[in-house]
Length: 145
Image (cartoon, rainbow, N blue to C red; front, top):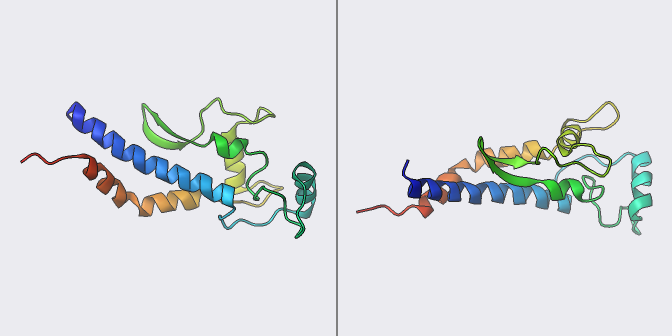
């Protein structure tokens, strides 16, 4: 593929991947993913860091956020394998736990925590909107006549 064409294709893919990443991040920040509520014990622990509002909800933090580090670490990454949304391998929280591990625990649950899927709904959204990638790429390419 010609270099100029490859750059335009990459630009279109970058636009799409970044829009999907933004949708994921915005969904986590707004609490718009349909996830189960916190257990009472964890809600109490989390409220000790954030405070509780008048309705008993946590001040400023949706269920999927503890400190903001996880959501802030989500990136659109372009590497030798192509485009992806995720974390850099070195990204860890304050306890040195990798964000990849945290993502797996949140997405699929653990023996002590119910699943709180947010990656799978985002992947489904991306799959359903793949035709928009073609439109984004085509919008960057001028057809020679």
